[in-house]
Image (cartoon, rainbow, N blue to C red; front, top):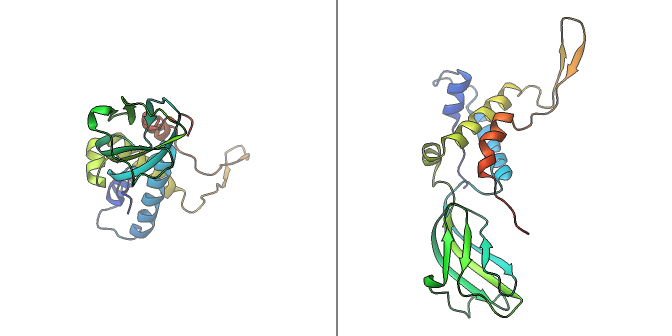
Length: 197
């Protein structure tokens, strides 16, 4: 199961709801999960650090592959094949590649020479193993989740917007809740850059 970016307890603190008040626990739990998945969609990668195996189509003499998830903490194996059959090929020696763990950029020193080629990479990557570790290592991501969840909770009775009356008798229709500007700013440095895929 995917990890969440924050906890209901943190959001309750922001909303000034007593920690012993369980009235909204169920809805807050759902909102935390929703906001966490929305954050993953926005940054285009999962929060959880775990083992992954991914396959990439690469061009002849291509020397760089951008892994889909990062930070990368370990590479288990890198294999290249001309027919996507990775069971019949040996993994590259670790001297034949290098990974920049912070960006997920995999540099191949032994270039595939016959195309089209495919590459399989087994590796461990992600921000943290659990929500507590994420909040400790990436407090800005967790606080962004706090803010967005609190905003969602405050609009729980009118998620698509409502008519607001002002002193001059005019009205304004608020729209659906978007990612808050502060949330977008906090998450922007973590968005995955796409290069052709």
